[in-house]
Length: 174
Length: 118
Image (tube, each protein chain N blue to C red):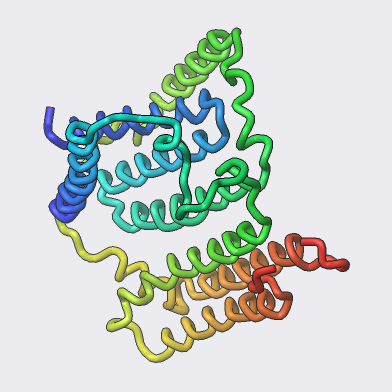
């Protein structure tokens, strides 16, 4: 077993453990913090796959912004923050576990005939700044210029809609 | 390329190790003679009122949403910035258009008073 595989197994275990804690934590606040750990584990998995840009985006957008939004969402709802409540683990959890195991087995069996499932992964030897290529493609009129500009319009729509829903109310109640 | 990530891994290890050692040493060396006044919560000498987990204002959420939009903008502009030397003036104008469209969102937020702290 190479050092890479050991790192992968540790990171995968931490990620799955975090996901398990998300499902079983009693306090909403702790759930969000476990979610951050899980997203961090996914970022490390991207790094192990040499998908550096995805790894950075994962940290920047998912941990930096989306997890913070969920955290604010929890902080805005006072009761769910204070109430620990009952354990979220249902007493018939093993039925769910069996169903999930069957689904997983069905997925594994169904992708067996697919050729790509057996392709051995090769390490990228020649590493030629793919981010630079992506940047060139984004502003190339023959490539992704229109999606690049349209995504700006999409982000504008997101901002305007968010502000309209949260702030723009007659009577000043925000 | 992976050796670059190794540096980050070493840095993460040190970043976890140093505070851990500091907290551990403080726990080992510090004398422990608790009494009710010592263990009470303090905040800059003031007596604390209520709980620490209070409900936050909805304003934080609006700031968070606007931040998310500009965060995604950063994701788009970063590859463009890396390729800045290879692309021409046209690409710079495209990026300026990209930023200008999003600037409309910022101006809308400003006009609607979403950036004011109520």
